[in-house]
Image 1 (cartoon, rainbow, N blue to C red):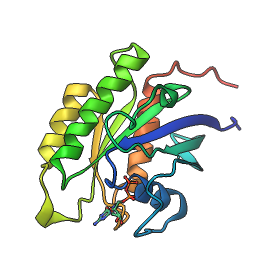
Image 2 (cartoon, rainbow, N blue to C red):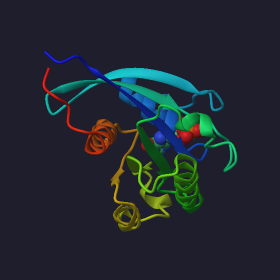
Image 3 (tube, helix red, strand yellow):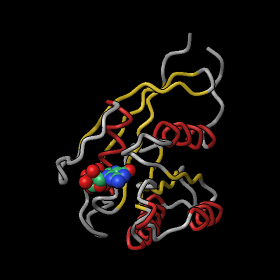
Length: 177
Ligand code: GDP
């Protein structure tokens, strides 16, 4: 069997969009209503994608504003970015555009593996961003988009599967071992 491949994934986005909730839901299968908002944590989980095992190192970042949300430190050794907004917040949707600009500026490339996630899809009445707006942005960026609810565990595993898929798209096919 082929040994697992290590893939480092960072979750970035405005405060309180649900980055920690998504991560904890994925790694530990629970929804915690309030989590420590200012702490950066790294989690590990094994993901199987197309018969290959991946050790996902998931970095739940904790920036507060557009200046601290992405610092160059995050670009080191990161294979893919999950950019999270809340479907209830136009501000958070605008923020992922700023974050992507910063990533591309920092890495000096015009494409990096990205999955954009509209979290809190369960909050129908408070919605400010439509599904189509998310999809249009993904088409523009040539990346994947998905809506999710960390609270109801909807599409959370899918977010990480899509992320691995995007990362693998960008890497050279492995030689058989
Ligand atoms: P972070 O700052 O981006 O890590 O956000 P948190 O994970 O701390 O979540 C911020 C708040 O939003 C918390 O009160 C969560 O319980 C809540 N929350 C997170 N995800 C969801 C979701 O999918 N649906 C709803 N209704 N609330 C959520």
